[in-house]
Amino acid sequence: MYHFPCNNMDYATIFLVLPFLLAFIYVYTTSSRRNPQLPPGPYPYPIIGNLLKLGNNPHLSLAELSKRYGPLMSLKLGSKTTIVISSPEMAKEFFHKHDQAFSSRSIPEIARVKNHLTRSIVFLPVGDHWRKLRRITQECLFSVQRLDASEQLRMQKVEQLVDYVSQCSMKEKPIKIGEVIFITILNILSNMLFSTDFSQYDSKSSHEIREVISGLMEGGGKPNVADFFPILASLDPQGLVSDADHYYDKLFAFFDSIIDKRLQRRANSPLNDNDISTKNDVLDLLLDINFKDGTELSVFDMKHLFLNLFLGGTDTLSATLEWAMTELIRSPNKMEATRLELKKHMHNNEKTLNERDINQLPYLQAVIKETFRLHPPVPFLIPHLAIHDVEVQGFVIPKNAQIFCNNWAIGRDPKVWSNPNEFMPERILEAKIDYRGQDLELIPFGAGRRICPGLTLAHRELHTVLGSLIHNFDWKLEGNMRAQDLDMEEKFGLSLPRNVPLTVIPVKL
Image 1 (cartoon, rainbow, N blue to C red):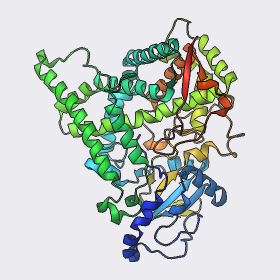
Image 2 (image 1 turned 180 degrees about the vertical axis):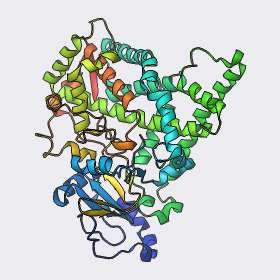
Image 3 (image 1 turned 90 degrees about the vertical axis):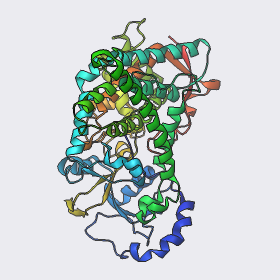
């Protein structure tokens, strides 16, 4: 969903505002002594605290620091006390044992744009409004009944992906696999919500929505000085809030256009029974709720819900599948094992993997889980916030401390995983670990009451897209590049995609 990790530290920006910060030194200068009740951590400098410790890749920097200070660590990021957890044991303390005490969210300034924080299922505190949105989202989109009803639509979009890749195969045309998967997932979501495609393969004219989503993801992943020093919020020194406001305007105008057309169609249709092609989509279900009781779900609520769904349901999934393809290309024996398993459940003339067959494909599931472990879709879970002082492992987590869960560090912990840097789906088969929030060794969707509600949809999309691509095609790299020479660097941001997009030439099987 909408994630707030710290990204590449913009040191130049920080130092530009330091003179202003010095004018308020009396507000932010804290005692030079660490609070002995806090978990261990590095010594904080005056004003900036431990900001410089984050480096260009905070998930790596904090993983290294945790080796010295432990899996429960405290830092001072500007004026904010921050707790970093880096082990399944600590995750269990925070998301199971003390889940209620840590159920609130740390609110970044960018979430205040268009008053998003008061309407977002991501940032709302656990309460009546949050529960209402969670219930409506579950009933209209993520319940088993709703997902089963929309299965054919998703299969149609995956089939279109296979057809497009087949055309590229005949032309021996290289494709950026992450990009075409992004378009597929975007269109799956847009059709479930609005019964329309938002993008097309090889079409520049229809990519505006993608540019808006990418702009919001990029802006949300940049470090915002105002988040570390709230007194600067009104200045918006990096222009991140202004940029987000611009993207929100474009996205909301897009939603308004769709909603207005739907309202007009409903008003003009006999007996208020709108077109059969759209009457089962999510927008119509939400409008039905709105007409019954406008206070239950306003159009304003709908637009913010759509925003969350598109931000959380596109980039993260396409990045995960791109990493899965990368790891399988680098491990031909594991690619072949996956393909052989698929052959047992799919005929040669079948284009797409049926969703109901996923449970019969343990190796394919292990590939997805092992990809989540090595390349989590978000390096940090959306930061939680302590509602009140909580004692954990003999330390006191103070009220309003923000909680970072380093997903990347948990997935690479040698105390939990043997040979943690190797791609080994077999380890998952032996351990029988799941990612639905109970096994804290693998929590790409979070855990506890704030677990991502879109997990069930993501589960289906990930397996059907990857399975269909593997079943229909083999893959070779451009220029006869060796698979072992692929650049495996990550690009830190809201998600954790490849730094260099994976470009491959599909070979039809």
